[in-house]
Image (cartoon, rainbow, N blue to C red; front, side, top):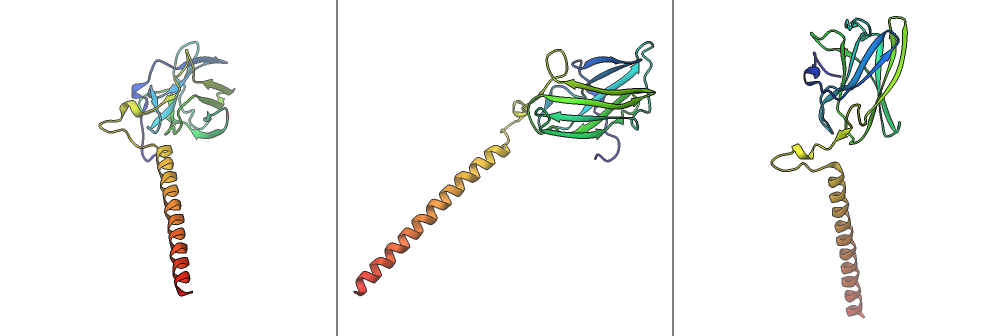
Length: 181
């Protein structure tokens, strides 16, 4: 999906969810918070030994993350990539294209421990995706919904103009036929 190495985890926020799974401690959330719609971000996953806090490396072949939006209306599985120079840290880059709550399902195996955990955005966990409009400067961007609305208005105007043209043409033809009689 991304060429080369993309490290988004350098600005990791504190708003992550922590959970112990067997002998491992997982921390899951956004790589960058707040998470803005239509802005590159990534699911961040840290895996350490729960007893020693030693990072668990080389898991990119054994665990994946499924991103779920809208109560499962949209879902996609991403491979996790190790974060360079940050042992035990993994990320799955993508661009969130909808505002709202997201669920990250981390699944696979860590050592001999089967993992299938859901992490949901919300209070005390990681944040939902928010609008990027507060960041837009000097002019706000036109959204797709706004473009669709404008196209609908243009279509209505075009249909109205077409109808008026047809009515005017029929009127002209009628006048010509009446003159000939």
